[in-house]
Image (cartoon, rainbow, N blue to C red; front, side):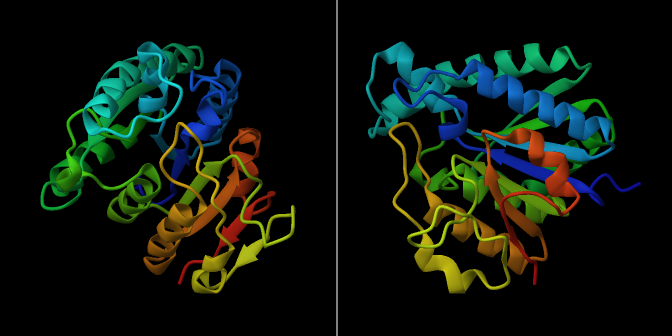
Length: 253
């Protein structure tokens, strides 16, 4: 089997993985995510995880009360936080017999160098108990090398890897229409809902719903079914892959 034929890319944001009050890792949230991903892999799905949280994980070590805006501090936080994040993932996934593989990317890696990275990813995916975990290489990426945020990174990786679906896990149940607290179940044309985006960026994150919708548009235009779903309820991942879950499903073109 081509490892990409049923490949699911799951992107999880900082707002799901860290505590709102101080930006430190939320251990319970990470445990729930790991358990759900292990169940998805046990069901035979090939997965890649695009995980935010490196900068947010490092913020506490620098005693900051929000996301650092200067690039040097942001890179320093990422250097500390990425190590902490991967140590946590590695320890938790080992209880399920799953080995994690770290893949750090910059915008340049998604261009002419992606053929080499793609070969590595497909080799990792050929092993049923290895999970590639991808993040932007924030500790070295200057503005000219940045993808932007992990929403954009996940959609570009999904397209380049030939994924079947992309799932963006966030702090909301899905895309909400203005004045509603219920997610829109299905969207056929992303352009029709672009103005639904709310200014929901957290203190320890970069992207908001506008960023997610831009990533969704890129993915669906390249034939990838995309979901926005509640990252605090990761046990729904298997239902999403079966096409029946709470969240917003964006139909591919």
